[in-house]
Length: 78
Image (cartoon, rainbow, N blue to C red):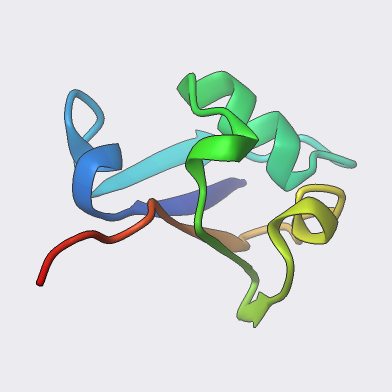
């Protein structure tokens, strides 16, 4: 089984748009971002299995088998 990680904007650099990872029971969003070399302060929005919330809370959420994450950095511009 696997999970799908969708990356946006600068998080795609060197990683691609979509990353497939092996599912490990009990894995959390924190486990995933650690393995991708992303730190929590870099994340503006995090969606786990279709649910969003404060990044600090979402990092603790266990990912479902065949689940997905969407990770967004802060957006700047004018």
